[in-house]
Amino acid sequence: MLRHLWCDESDTRKAIPPELVQRLAQRVTASEKRHSGEIRLFVEAGLPMSYLWRDARPRERAIAVFGKLRVWDTEHNNGVLVYLLLVERAIEIVADRGLASKVPPPEWQAIVSRMGSALREGRFEDGLTQALEEVSALLVAHFPVAAGAENNNELPDEPVLG
Image (spheres, rainbow, N blue to C red):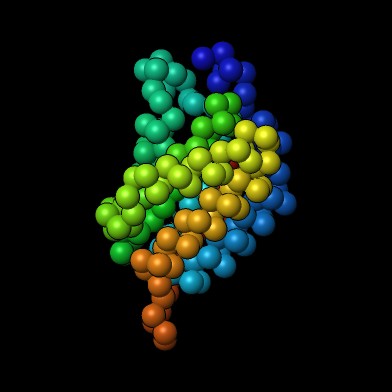
């Protein structure tokens, strides 16, 4: 609990500086031109106090953020949240039902495992970029943009720092 209270937004901004936020946003924008899905990145230093009192796990917070950011509210139900909790180096990927029904849980867990080593070493850009590339590949495979089809950007591309 103390580790979560000790860390704050300044720790998040130290790990994910403004120039990295911009590069990640550009990568999300480029990715979303290839599929109809929406990808959101959310990074926070520690869990809010209300989660700590309940002894909540990072997955519970990721699901709440998924709803708060309205990632579930896309036309094709194919939004994806990549959630990173810095204090625990915890990674969660939450996919909306349209994509989750096509990708089995072990495949999501494999993505988390692969990006985990970069994040544990403090290579946040590498880990988040890898997750973005792998999630993008799944979205391209299951929700490609048809030639000539309109592809609206339904959610902001910029990562959210909490």
